[in-house]
Length: 273
Image 1 (cartoon, one colour):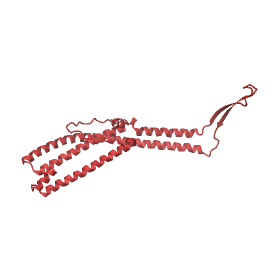
Image 2 (cartoon, helix red, strand yellow):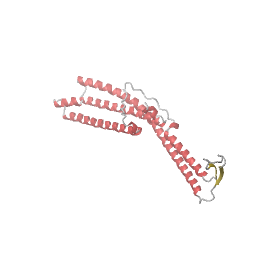
Image 3 (tube, helix red, strand yellow):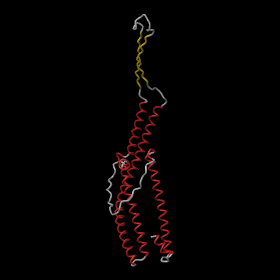
Image 4 (cartoon, helix red, strand yellow):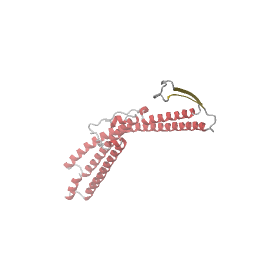
């Protein structure tokens, strides 16, 4: 459309106002394309960083949106089960470590019993000796039982137990806060998934209607029964509808990836495939 407008403007068939309108739209589009390509490169670099240095040579292709004529509503996302969520596993392990630390600090106050034993066998000067080999050998052994207990340590062990208990409380509180945060994020995900699902269906239908309307207006414009302003408006409406459809499509994919992340199967669901 911009090239056609430029040719008609040079021929004197279009005004400078019409030409500038299309020229500014074209330049804005080029800026948007450059920004989108930059974001794709940033995403590729971030993926390489997340996967590891060993796969820096891997190339990631940008996903292409599904043809609206073949697009179907995505599967309804159920509430993810958090039992396999990695942050939940980490929080559980941190709680167990804190509990073990308290038990270990308490055991420092318990008496300790040690039982050790040793045996020694010697036989000197048995080479070229006139006596028999067993005549001058010696065998010795000992057993030692040690009982160690604490009489007075100025409260050091007691304070160590208190510190470990406080740390356990901090870990439990931190785990509770993290759990509440994750639950809130899951609730937001479910609400957003419902909104995106509805937006995807509406944007798909809207894009189909706008495409049909644009084709009709282009035909009428060639026949001379539609104005140039109507054609420009139809083109802008079609592009806006296509942008909304693409946004809804990738929002749906992002929600599916977040759902897999909360279920602890993001790697199996996406990276392996």
